[in-house]
Amino acid sequence: MTQKKLLAALALAFAAHGAAQAQATPVGLWKTIDDETKTEKSLVRITEAGGALSGKVEKILEAGKADAKCEKCTDARKDQPVQGMTILRNARADDHKEHWEGGDILDPNNGKVYKLRLKPLDGGKKLEVRGYIGPFFRNQQWIRVE
Image 1 (tube, rainbow, N blue to C red):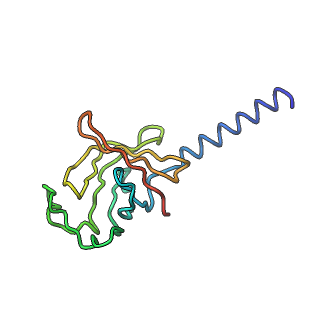
Image 2: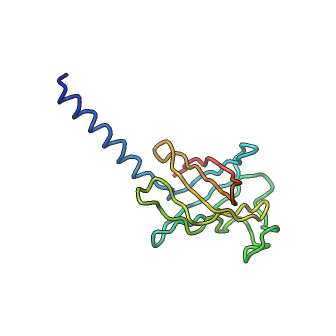
Image 3: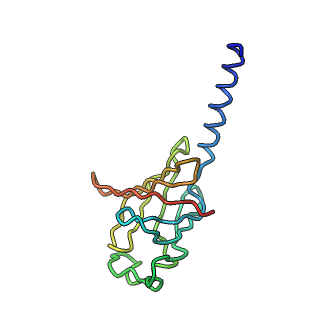
């Protein structure tokens, strides 16, 4: 293979990789995985409106928790059903659409609201969800369902 052909092949490979990364988006249906127990917890649908992402719990997967309410919430979601609740709000893409941040995410189990960063991984098959308060953070990896 000539040097020109090799450089052209490498350029195409990098361009394809960059296009795949740019197309990876958090929009879709995700299976949430607990960061401590590694168990499947729920299905969350992330949608986009006006450039901002929001996420709503479509289904609770934990046995016996389908009727759970957010007893520890301190905002308007207090004592509301978790299924159907918006837990992720106002995340916006960075300039390169490599991650989304600026919004917040609620943990209905403890009622805490964390600042949020979303980062698609593995070509958009997984989603790194980071919730943080100051220097303290939690990471989860969600798995794309659709």
